[in-house]
Amino acid sequence: MSIFKKFFTKEQKQTLDKGLEKSKSNFFDKIGKAIAGKSKVDDDVLDELENILVASDVGVDTTVKIINRIEERVAKDKYTTTSELDRILREEIAALLAENNSSDVKNYDLPNIKPYVLLVVGVNGVGKTTTIGKLAAKYKASGKKVLLGAADTFRAAAVDQLIEWGRRVDVPVVSKGMNVHPATVAYEAVEEGIRQNADIVIIDTAGRLQTKVNLMNELTKVHKVIKKHIPEAPHEVMLVLDGSTGQNAFIQAKEFTKATEVTSLAITKLDGTAKGGVVIGISDQFQIPVKYIGVGEKVEDLQVFNKQEFVESFFTRR
Ligand code: GDP
Ligand code: MG
Image (cartoon, rainbow, N blue to C red):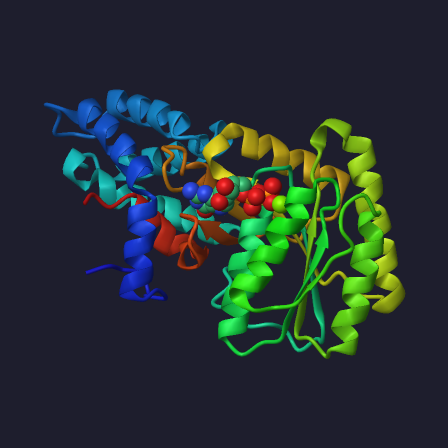
């Protein structure tokens, strides 16, 4: 029996398990080799474990914290066997993440603000538009009135892609084509959201990190014009990170949070990569909550991030 309270349905758990398959098998292959022929968790095992966690993209700082916790625990109980290692890992990592003051979101409920303005930021290709499409589908399915703003006006394909998502999940999209200033689209999207009495307005943006100064100026302008309609908006600025880039996702999170206001994180593409450990590191290192994880391209592959469910899925052998 699990010690964790269950938030997920069986289907969600299966989707998560499947999405983390590569990360898990990679991790346990290495653990298997590290503890082969050993019955006790000794210094050698802990050294190996440290290397394996770092290689799994958990990040050095978070790995050190995890190893310290396990060391303390092993020191108390001199006969910790290697067969207990999976459980100890689950318990210590879950406890570590729980100490972080960011709490998990439980579902897709929106606060009592209308329209709730969600600005989505991140480097090109990380999965912003896809995540927006998935979110739009979820909100729409829960009876919410959704409006999308196509403010990635840098590439025609980006606008088309959002329009296509809008068509697919049957939500309106405010678009002005390409080459207009993103702020123009953001302004009109919020205006339209107010007019249509929408529950949520989700604004897509461009993310050309190679012109970082321009990008940040653009985002500042977007913020400014949104505030002309609703001074408290955007109510949420979500940074999307591509989990399959491992440590790169870390670097992007650091750079973006320094340069612009970010209030939530989404980590995509955890399926098909062995770098899923990055979620643990990011969740530990940043004071910004990881709200969603993407474990595939389909709508149902976007999941609300739950620390304990994630740790349990990651560190449980199949
Ligand atoms: P954007 O440039 O940030 O808007 O990124 P897109 O939304 O266009 O996504 C880039 C690519 O990543 C697309 O081919 C998406 O289908 C794919 N993608 C997005 N999220 C996921 C995910 O969770 N898993 C997988 N496997 N692919 C994803
Ligand atoms: Mg896009």
